[in-house]
Length: 65
Image (cartoon, rainbow, N blue to C red):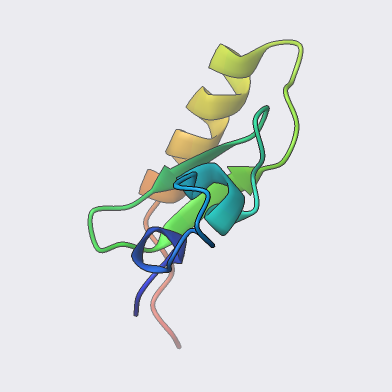
């Protein structure tokens, strides 16, 4: 499934706008092109927020019972 980086940027050439994160946002994209986490605003402690998002993205999912 394509993600926002596969979409045209509306002539601005700015992938951040195409992804809806703006100038102060960030996103974490998995190798399979799934957006695992996204924010539209800056945070007071970006390192901790990104570390938590990475932990959640890497956490194994439970198999359906």
